[in-house]
Image (cartoon, rainbow, N blue to C red; front, side, top):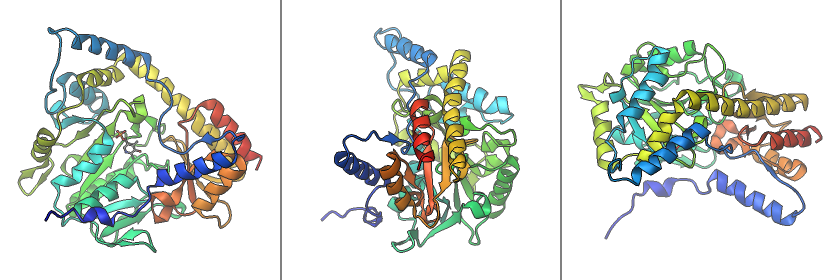
Length: 404
Ligand SMILES: *Cc1c(COP(=O)(O)O)cnc(C)c1O
């Protein structure tokens, strides 16, 4: 008789965003006259920029003609896109990443969930707490995390690196030595980040202890401060210890279009084995490429017109971020993030738990956010608001919060 992968049974029940959706639906049904403003889920709302739409239309037309039609894409992605990425995201910043070290994919969620496959199930992972849930859950499915303690919300074989106001949301080197370290900077959910010099310390640490860093740079485009690294490869020695994941979702609104990439440097080795070769094998076996039309759209992200339009789009969201931040501060909240990321992380007032604050905000202000505890035990007592709404809704939400 067949057996299932029992590790799936270990995953704790309800998914954060479905619980939120249920609560909001119940409130809305009971209060049909109230208009609810959603500053919860991390999805963009602005349309795809014109230069990108134009490139997509052109690629669609190419598909209609036998002479320009494209079938399966090359394993690693089209050269035109990998070259644009290498030049704009890396060489322009002094990072020596070649086009053939870039693997084009359908987004950073799949890559961040799949990358653990090329590592031993005996490896111990370290994650920031709070954290983007995919890193932990994908390792649960692979059987790397031990058992779940419902009382603490922690896995017995995961090394947690608390990021709280006490350490300014900067992860500290753990007491136990990890094999795989997940870092997402600028961070979702806290909206905070670390300085390039602090990231360099992580690279040095990983090289010293023989750990690999899985670096999620999904929010890189939101960095506004000078001393923050846009890529981990800006740090000396990162090519021997780090894999970088990038996404077109948050910088270019591709959440529904789907495009991302992963960098596995050729110098990254374990014993004599090249991780680049392993990921190439995995990609070739299990993935058949992002669509040609979407890769052309990705190329347009790096055109002059695309860059200018996306700069405006990011500025639009970051204006929301500063509106939220300033409004909350005015209302007396303790607020973090929102400077290098489209997320605002606030301390819940008094002794309120994250979910108590969720209910309070929904009932009294009709504003939806995300309870920090949903991202890990150290997120308890915090709350996330996102800058991805419309400016009008953001202003209206803050007026309501200030009036509480
Ligand atoms: C949104 C997000 C991603 C991007 O996922 P896609 O699959 O590319 O849409 C990756 N990592 C983090 C932390 C995110 O918040």
